[in-house]
Length: 180
Image (cartoon, rainbow, N blue to C red; front, side, top):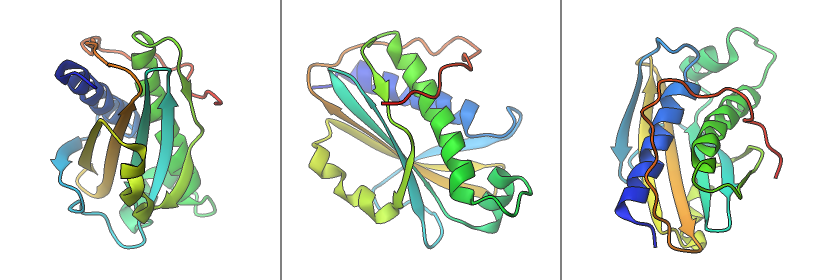
């Protein structure tokens, strides 16, 4: 079971990580909007970068959906035409998940984080196999043109109840890369 204040904390931590780590510059506009399953507005041939954070009490799965379109490529690859978008996006996704991990380690010191991997977005349809106690979906728009989506899924192995303090203005920038 995950308490309502823990669900709220997971969401605030996630939203803060997205706004601070998915953008190339902190001045860039990043809009997050809750989405219903199957309604997010990403282009064709969508992929999803998947990362997990695991502790004794829970497993959090973060799926960041993207399409290889011109706006997304321009934003994340930054002019390096030789670099695959998936590689560039996995680096940014890893930073985002690392920020989530940093915020959660204050409450759950026994955690590990996976390295990112890319799947076809249809694989997210099988999350019910993880028996999530909490799942939420978002549409994300960066600078009005880069369209992403996110799936945040938490499976609980124990009762989860905590309140995260997301009021501090700065996130630490070390420790995002952890091998699990």
